[in-house]
Amino acid sequence: MRYYVMSGPHQGDTGEMTEGVGEIQLPHPATTGVRCRYRVNTSDGLIEQGGFEPGVQLHYVGDVPSQG
Image (cartoon, rainbow, N blue to C red; front, side, top):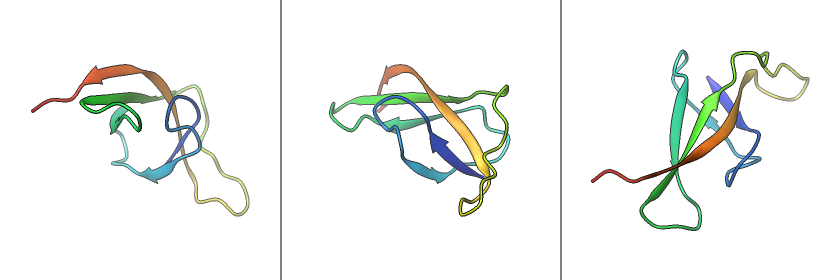
């Protein structure tokens, strides 16, 4: 499933995620050892506009330390 990041440090980014997953984490673009959390807002509909692959909207919900 295609995702579109709507807010936070990765705003404007797109990528692929497993359908049905409600949250993903991406490496923070400016801070080492931190990951940004993004959630699918289930009240948002799928993005289905001409010229774009259908997908879900992700919204920034905070940062967490990287594991490992």
